[in-house]
Image (cartoon, rainbow, N blue to C red; front, side, top):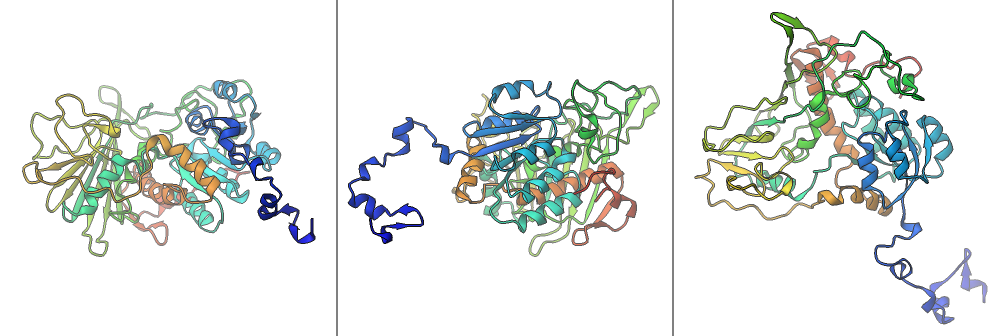
Amino acid sequence: MRPDEFANGVVSRRHVVAAGLAPLVVPRHVLGGTGYQAPSDTLAIAAVGIGGMGRNYLDGCKAEKIVALCDLDHNYAAKVFETYPAARRYHDYREMFDKEAKNFDALIIATPDHMHAILLLAAIQMKKHIYCAKPIAHSIGEVRKVRQALLGAKGIVTKGSIQDSRTDYARSTTEILNAGVLGPIREIHIWTFHPIYPASLVRPRETMAPPAGMDWDMWIGPAPFRPYHKAYHPGNWRAWWDFGTADVGDMGCHTLHAYFEELRLQAPSVIYGNCSTRWDDIAVQTRTPETEGSANMVVWEYPARDAMPPLKMHFYDGGIKPIRPAELDHAIAMPNEGVLFIGDNGKLMSSYYGGNPFAPFGRPARAGAPSALPGGLLLPVSKFKDFAQPPKTLPRCEKPDHYTDWTRSCKRGVPTALPVEFACQMTEVALLGTLALRTDKLLEWDSAAMRVTNQPEANRFVEPAYRAGWKL
């Protein structure tokens, strides 16, 4: 073989064919059978926070190689550890990163909200692909830092855990809005039956021993320290301001994705809200300043955005619903959750996640349900009876492909259907709702300055200080 036939240690394909060796090149599926994924095509994944939603995220990526798993509570996460016996187990994410950084390509983040930003920035520094639970971070200051870091990073593929984003039913709602049939939109009303966890709580007076082997101080992380209690872990941390972001933070991104960009909802100017009150006896009110209410309401006010008029976006949870549209048939019950868009020329009622509110998630409509388009119910019905669902012009990512969209995009080095960078923008708006509920004040917001201008004391929650020993 001449020197020019062997460059950089690789024999050229031309000379392989000339030597009669081409038949040795066999397609991967022949070697491994139908569905076979070659090791070279397999993503090595590590995960932090696997006992709760993390188990679902891992299940969506089970075709890949799960190499390392970390959870502070190994009892709570026991079944997940058992599902991936080859994965090395850790309590401390820092130890996992030190020992495994060279062994994994991508990181799943599924911890409580107050730990997201620390893990995200560590993953970005390690140049790992990222799948992150929403909300992307616990404070607006954290969100801005994460987004800035990602925009400056190269080669990192990310996705937020908004499973219904870019699905056919969500896109169908977006395409109705894009058609302009409603005219200028002036109001959005969003409602959900969540929260599905205890709320309107007071801090427990008694203390408990944390689960065996659990480092409770590590779980508290950058938040102010408090003793362990089952009111926080496992699973009930979301209502507490120090760890979660309330239902509006937890569920906001699950609806905003269908219309956030189209209606230019990035920068409200005024936000306010109210939490329900708790009464433990007749005329005995119990204040709950450390948690959201069992039912909550938030309003975001938007100024005119170029040709778009001022808009108010309302959020209701805990079973509260907006005023019933006068045009809705009296025989039709309001759905348990949904979105109502009000324009100058009509109204559109969609599912909370996008799509037909009477056939959510693209499922078949129940018997006797009103007739609606795939993107929702247009009102008044008589006015829009001849309006057809617009053509499918937007790219789709169906729910069964949500996780494989991420793993496939990591391998190809292309953006996912919903990158964390975009999820950061939606998270910020949701967290403004959290801020309004936590302060119980009307807030005037300067987005460019990242500052509340009329209630200076509220800014301590925009970018809260970390506990000693923790930093971004």
